Length: 58
Image 1: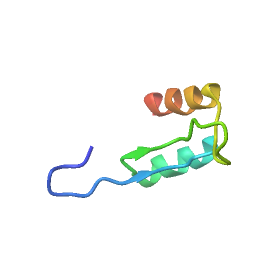
Image 2 (image 1 turned 120 degrees about the vertical axis):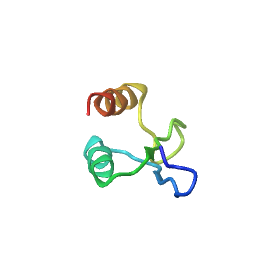
Image 3 (image 1 turned 30 degrees about the vertical axis):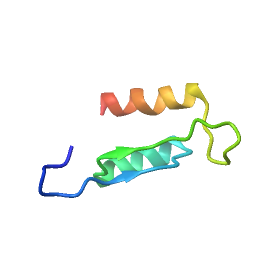
């Protein structure tokens, strides 16, 4: 995570694992996903698991 003198960057609304991978490689501090079914950016629990399992390995 960012140091006290820097700005942390979080990218929200990720809908695709390739987006998450690209954002992680660019150095974002965090990614966000939407778990509200009525949202056009909603992703399922299984998709969320996949994103975060990938991020832990890399």
